[in-house]
Image 1 (cartoon, helix red, strand yellow):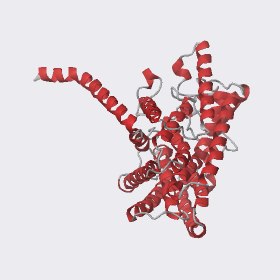
Image 2: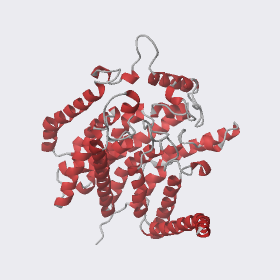
Image 3: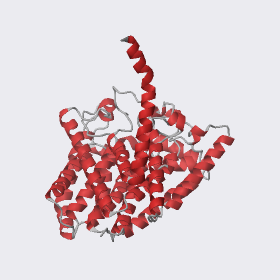
Image 4: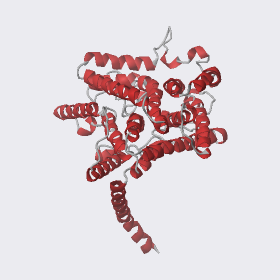
Length: 468
C-alpha cells in the first residue's frame, strides 16, 4: 500500500500539469469560438473572492488568488489568464474580420504603458529589480486595466451577448448580497471586521472589502434602470422579480457594510442613475425613496459612531481629524508625508518602486510594503509617477466622461442599465479613489476596468446588426 501511495504522490505533479495543459487547450478552443465564455469565469473570480483579510484575527494575510504566481511571473496568474483570453478574442476577431469597437480610452492606456516602460528602464539603470518597478504597489495595475476593457469589447459584440452580461452581473450581485446578508444575520457577519476586532465597536457588517459593495452597486444600477426607466421593453415576470430582489438585497448589503466610502458612493451612484429614470419615478424616489435611504444611513451611522473612543456623529471623519493637543491623525500625517515627497519630485515622482520618506511613523506601514501605498489613489499616482501620471489619469477620466455622456443618451432600453451601471460604479468608487487604496489592489483596479468597459460594450452592442 505504501508503494501505491508513493506512486500516487510522485505522479500527482505530472497529473496536475497535464490537467492544466488540457484545460488550457480547451480554453483556447472555446475562446476562438466564443470569447465571452472565458470572460464569465474570469469575472466570477473577482466577484466572489476577497482581495484582503485586513481586520481578520484568525486568518493571516498571505498569497491569494490575486497574487498567486506573481513571484516568478511578475504578475498574478489571473492576469496572465486574462491576457490569454484577450489573445483568443483578438484571433477570433481577426479570423471573422470583425471591426474594432469604438473606444477613446486606448491612447491614454498606451500612454500608461509607455510611462511604465520608462519607469522600468530607469529602475534598472539605478540598480533596482524589474519586479520592484512592475510591482502592484506602483501603477502597473492601471496598465492591466486596458486588456480587460479591450477583451470585454471583443467578447460582447451583439445585443444578446450584452444583455446576457447584464443578467449575469445582476445574478452575481444578488447572490453575493444574499450571501453577505445571511452571514450577517445568522453567522456573525464578515470576519474581516476591523471595527469590532481592532476598534472595539460592536457591530456586524456584510462585507468590509469595498469591491463586494461595488459589485452590489453595479447590480443595483442595472436593476434600478431596468425597473424605473421610461419606455422600457416588456420583460418576463421572472426577470422583473429578480430585478426587484437584486435592488433590495444589494442596497441593504451596501448599507450594512458600515463603510463610509460605500455610503457616500451609493449616493453618488444614485445621482448618476436618476436622469435615467422616468419623470414620475424620479419624483416618487425623491419624495419617498430618498428620505427612507437617508433614514437608513442615519440609523446605521448612529449605531457605528455611538460607540468607541470617538463616539458621536460629529466624529464621522474621526480618523481624518487631528486633536488640538497631542499626536496628529495618522491618516493626515500619511498624506502630508507623501505630498511633501511629491512636491519635491513633481515632474517624475519618486518612481513606481519608491517609498515616501517618514513612512515608519505610520502604524499600518509597519510591513514589507511600508511606504509604497497610501490612503489616496490620486496622491498615490502623483507620488509614484508625478505630473505625467496625473495628466494620464485626468485624460482617462475626461475620455470616459465625454463618451459616456453621449452613449447614455442613445442607448436602447434593454442596454441602458448596462451602460449606466459603468458610470454609476465609477461614481461609487470616487470616495475610495480619493481617500482609499485602490491602485495597488488587483481586484479593485480590475473591477474599475469592468466599470470603464460597460458603457462602451453597451453602445457597441446597440449598433451591432441584428441577425435576420
